[in-house]
Image (cartoon, one colour):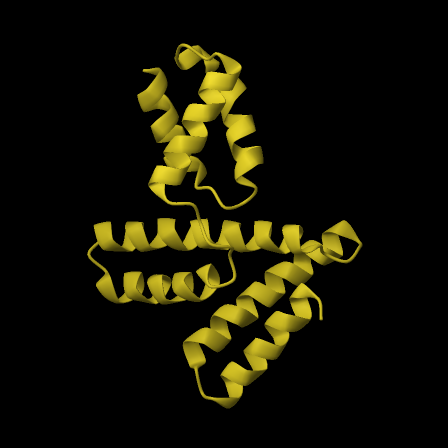
Length: 147
């Protein structure tokens, strides 16, 4: 069963069990996945699917933050519910300590000494993290180590 079929199956089971929020989130996710598939004109790999989910997760986080700043807790809560559904499809993310250890080892390997070396270190960190590393957190830790 490919990535899209798995999500479809889970959407149907959410519909049958009456989980309206989960159903709506999965329906949106399926639409985005199909859009990407149509644009690429080929089957999506799991990596492509994860990229779409990461984009949606980032959007939900930003939206929830904006709604909280605008004193709209009900809308922020809706975004957070969607966020939790989407995050369940992502691989387990690295902890801050694991990120720090990886960033430190890459800094040591590359011989980076200052903030000017960020462009040399970050691509390696993201490549080694292989989708399970938060780029924002890695960047903060890198700046802290090099700064």
